[in-house]
Length: 75
Image (cartoon, rainbow, N blue to C red; front, side, top):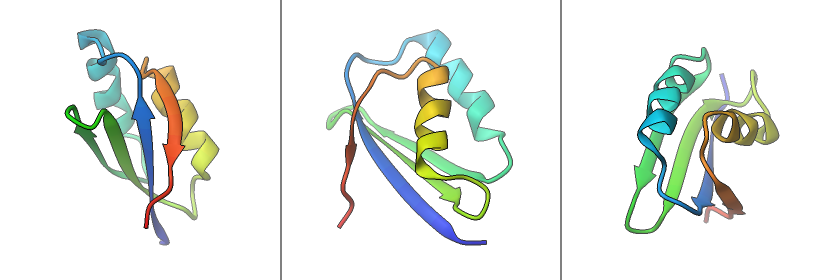
């Protein structure tokens, strides 16, 4: 298992329906953790890179209803 982390800035605050959909994304095998920071308007996802590539993670978040604006570079 190769652990990776991706971070994104989102636009509008996620709706209640989007947050319920995120609960389903959390259950996807290979997704380790999803953290939201409402102050910075960011979401971080820890995932198994041997199972997923970053564009798939972004697609899962968008499919759940998160309005992703940009991918952030993690230092």
